[in-house]
Length: 88
Image (cartoon, rainbow, N blue to C red; front, side, top):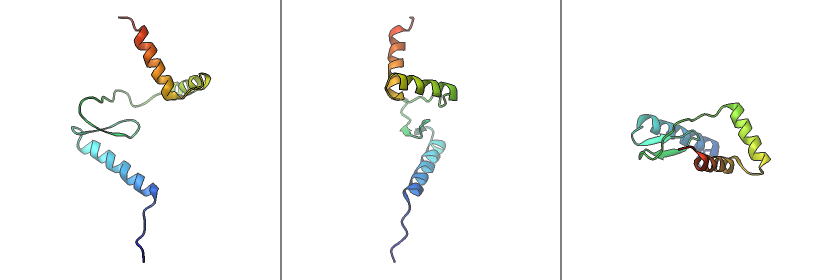
């Protein structure tokens, strides 16, 4: 009889749990960002704010839809605009 194979869902759940444990047990080596992506803690990644309010999330999605782009592109444009027009 062939051994029981784990479903993709089980494997993903185990991997997500492992990432959480690694970041919690070794914060000097790993950072888990708000999107559940594990990063090496080399000092280049700083998680300042993991959450966006529901209202702002909705507004951002509506703005991206109005501009016919995705939220990632919209955030990139907003950051670029901010940097160009920021008062010194």
